[in-house]
View 1 (tube, one colour):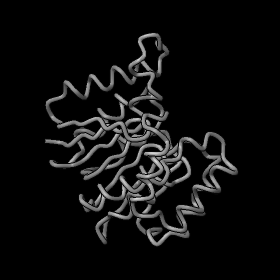
View 2 (cartoon, rainbow, N blue to C red):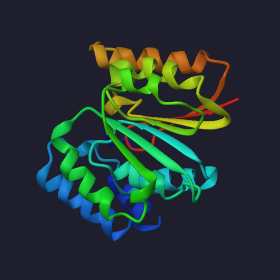
View 3 (cartoon, rainbow, N blue to C red):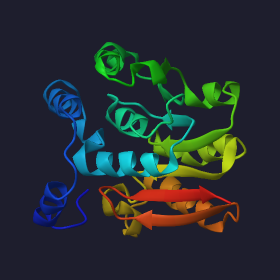
Length: 212
């Protein structure tokens, strides 16, 4: 999952704004108590999400894949004062843990946390959205994109995580279903004239799409 020298990444963190005390606690508790803590966005990516959200000042954010809530809290930092983020996840076992951090956040009143299957839930959520963050099951990325693209405001941002998939995306020997699904998804976005796109080798790969 590392694409740059760890020392360079640590230097980058040191010269980026610090995460809040609540986010630092959430990172620590996730690593101590929750399975697969590498799924957490973490300090550097979290500051990037916050930064882009603050530029966008979105009224409505949709997040597909909450995990323990780190990325949702970062995205909420850029919400307009009356804005809202809806974050979806299927893992009921994480609900109490995650909601406890949302409830302690200054953005608690702006976060709507739903335990639901995104494939069924997204069609029930009215748009438009200014910002969508996709970080869920990789085989359904193309479906999630199709479900949200027509609900986006012009100029809206779609961010998609893990699109380099620990480097497997460029390894010809990697032919598992998740890797191939991500290859197909990346190509789908490249070919879609409705969005501008740039793929950043940040952490595990972050695809940025801007709706034209």
